[in-house]
Image (cartoon, rainbow over all chains, first blue to last red; front, side):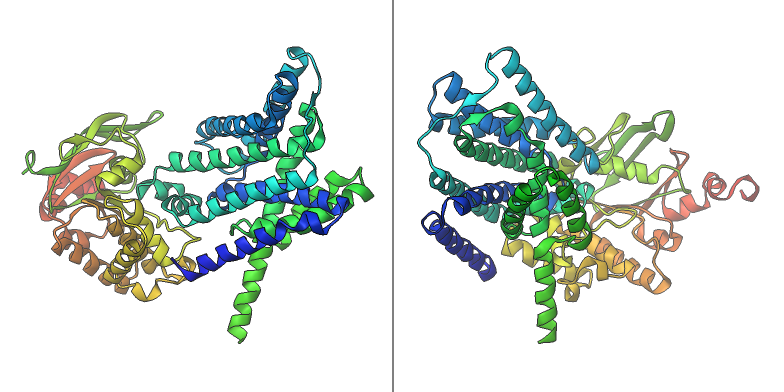
Length: 310
Length: 245
């Protein structure tokens, strides 16, 4: 094992340990920002596991997230199931859905893949809304638990830690290497013997699993759920923006992007509630033009320059 | 030799793209340790033939078998694992990966699989073979054209293919590079590798190939030793037109 990889893991462990104390250190407002940030850290890190090495930009995160939240709502509200049971079922359903989408999109790449995942997320949202409105009778669902912000925060922290650890193992495994080759040239990947379909579907399924799990865990925060709310397409874009801001080339990239962006986004949402989409677009442009490799890319550039200078 | 000793056998292979017949009813065998040249004018279907052997395309008709097993219905990655390795007409390297990682890509998933230290060592060995080990940590964008071709060859060799497909590996090299390139392929020949090569450099074909298959307009028009086929009237006509034949 290379020492660099180990030290990365030790740093991650220290960060998780420190982050666990947040609920005792800050008040309600900052804790709620902490919950939002932790949610995006888990989502962006799992997004980067697949989209980072392969360069397949997925805008379906919102769909898996929504399925997770919605299942918890439906299970608890309409079928009187426990939160825990639904939190187990939701990611499994998310994973199955992701596997199906993965197989359906195998032949798509580049912008076609992006548009397909976006369209699909919208379709799932509309189908769920339609089923809800026409067959299940009620328009909204109640998710009533004893959880408070800190409990949700800790659960999300645990998920984020697991996602990171899994990503760390994957990036050092054969399948991680295969994904980087797929991202470089899929024809070469096939001709060196990589089963590109399997590798892509496995990783896409993993991101679907975690997005649905995060959606399930965050559901109690809202108490009342409507399909249009949990299937927000904005979430898919936010996850991509935060990951790109941090840098999709490294597993810890999203971490660097999520924290400043979440704080900024909260501020924008309060100050300019009607212009938030405009702000989102501006951020996209700014990142693509100014930070093509994210903040991580900039940090590594600076580090390389300092080493040369020294 | 033709039937029993054949490691690769192409039988009645046709490839159509819509109405265009790129390869029509091609048949030839390759024996073990043999170097076979596939030659012919531009657009005669040579690369399409190679693409069908490597699994990039499926034949519309006919079949390709390796050691008696049909491989033409397998996907490219399975064919690679069966032991067919290839280089591409236009070099294909993985831009985000280092030279060493590019070569390792061949060792990790190929015919014989390696991982970790073993894969690194083997990739170094292959780079050494093509004379590039000193560059192993360079980014591929810093390489010259011949060095890129060497990396691609090293990647293919890293998969330890039983059949090596070289698609115009010598094309685009300057005279000095060409000399180095021919030497490299000669070394492969001396190892007793089975090679199918598409090539335009006639000197290289004469000195390297045991046998040549000549294609014109998608069909085989001649087969035999390089000297034989290069003096064949029909081959000359295909290359130079009726007046010179």
